[in-house]
Length: 259
Image (tube, rainbow, N blue to C red; front, side, top):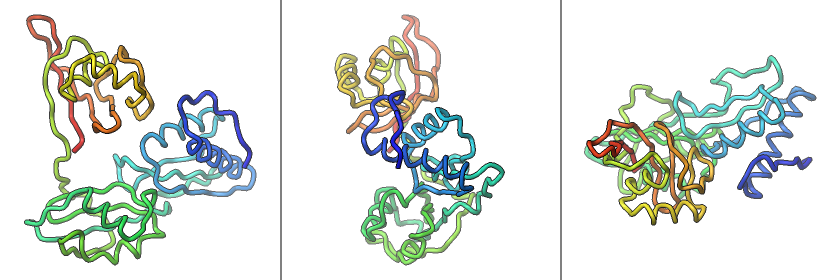
């Protein structure tokens, strides 16, 4: 593998560098040898880095797909010019678990069962949890293992291949509303975590925070509606909306916390 200069990407790990260099190798193989390559599932941060590094070499023959529209975890497909695969050719399979509606499963319950089968996290995409039915997207190499699942924790499940696009996903957010002095990151994080702005600023400066899945260590950074932000150990949030101002010129906002 030929190492490239990736200094334009800040705060990346050695693991990131290995992964991104591999993707750049794939782009060269696609151009020179007409080879098509697929990754395992990438998280949202890895997808952002992938997009940046592909743009840096002006390579456009790739796509990210997670098995459904709006997926969070996605597989990277790199292909030769004029060789774009159909989505059904991307090695992603869906498995649906059905169970009694009175039984309650969580994302953690299902992921824990899959990890118990020694399935690597990178082989598992989105997990959609509903009432009496949940769907898991996986790479095709672990399909048989996932289809073998008959229990998740103490709950009996029936496993079948396929995805019901009408699956009603259980609400997975907690809504937080309140007022802030400004749309600075520290002000919004202070509301989201219910801590002082000083403590929020300290968390941000510590390097524990991300905005848009990339490291963000400036408390005065302004956030925009739709921004996703997180702090290690405290969870992940979406800045949903600005809802007006108070008589004292404070700003009403809504934040959603992933739960």
